[in-house]
Image 1 (cartoon, helix red, strand yellow):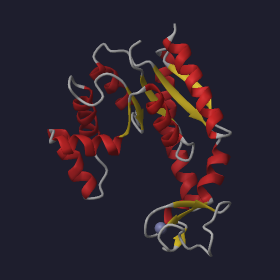
Image 2 (cartoon, rainbow, N blue to C red; image 1 turned 180 degrees about the horizontal axis):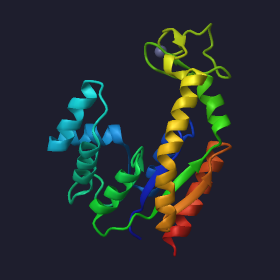
Image 3 (cartoon, protein in one colour; image 1 turned 180 degrees about the vertical axis):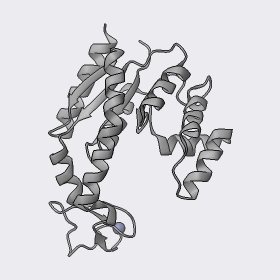
Image 4 (cartoon, rainbow, N blue to C red; image 1 turned 135 degrees about the vertical axis):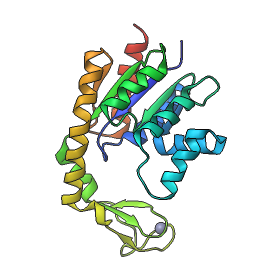
Length: 219
Ligand SMILES: [Zn+2]
């Protein structure tokens, strides 16, 4: 059976990165976030990869046409995503979803999976998040370091990031929903959408994901 081509959609805090990595490992395909694709392509010295890296190094948002260029290079013959992939963090806009179909150039995307977790639940997860200032290790108010908000790994101070306040998170989630509804509609119209309940233990969520992917591949 051909290797799967999957897109994983989901809010920040929905556990998307972890599940995308597990899916990639399970199906033997690369799982890459856009940031990782940019770095990989820059390391290969591709034109768009180097351009994307320049924006990232300056802490700027990578413009749409460069994001799409990098994806196109990575999907091209000989590129790391040629045969199969789990994309995480791309597409982020309807335009990017349409461009992904264009650069796939006849190769079918198997499935776009929306990992669905209600806003209230991710808000709780993210608002309770605490991060080591030094090594960026992530903790949670329900799972703090052993000693007085001092990092177990490096001894750094464990704090709440400025952009992890409830208000800031709520704003990010609202923006995400506004951007994502058109993408979800687009994949639904093209018969490529699966909705998967992302609430519960990681292992249970993973089993639900494999079930929809396998059902799709065994048509
Ligand atoms: Zn640390």
